[in-house]
Length: 218
Image 1 (cartoon, rainbow, N blue to C red):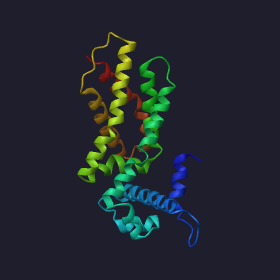
Image 2 (image 1 turned 180 degrees about the horizontal axis):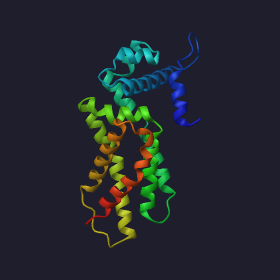
Image 3 (image 1 turned 90 degrees about the vertical axis):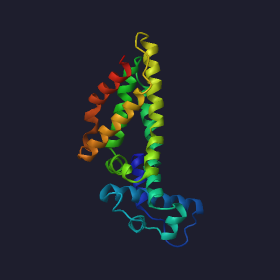
Image 4 (image 1 turned 30 degrees about the vertical axis):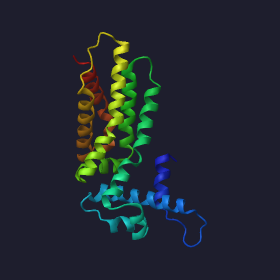
């Protein structure tokens, strides 16, 4: 069972009733995990606007008090869910790119494939993140902007490596990493909206060409 599948199992199972001997921290962690998982699933299926706190509480099988002990409001719970697994995704990209050969473009190809596959394997998360997150308000927009930072850093490092391997390449234009991240994000969001999340990896070739072209352009 994958780590992602294990999380789904834990989220679906409430704690035992009555005396269970679990620490308060364990109880709170379980409740939080179930709440954010329920929030992501409901938002993916119904949309952010149509999902309410009572809906989430019922799906997570926790009390209203438990919800508000964890989150100030619906938006806070949704944002917590959207950022929950991003470090795992970044780790998977870096791990994939680390086994590349001597050329920077191979690291890009492997990292990009890992990125697309990660979302392809999590269709509800992809729906919530790419389609519904921008609709959740100003804090959501700010959170997405902050989430871009690791990708900008990876692209800048990749561009520097490309120029070490090929000194004839022109200097990197300052806006290029943002153009790549913003453009790729909107492209993937469109694929998810059109119901093509199950075939995201089929776009790897086009996104690879787009990224290489911008990273190496004069």
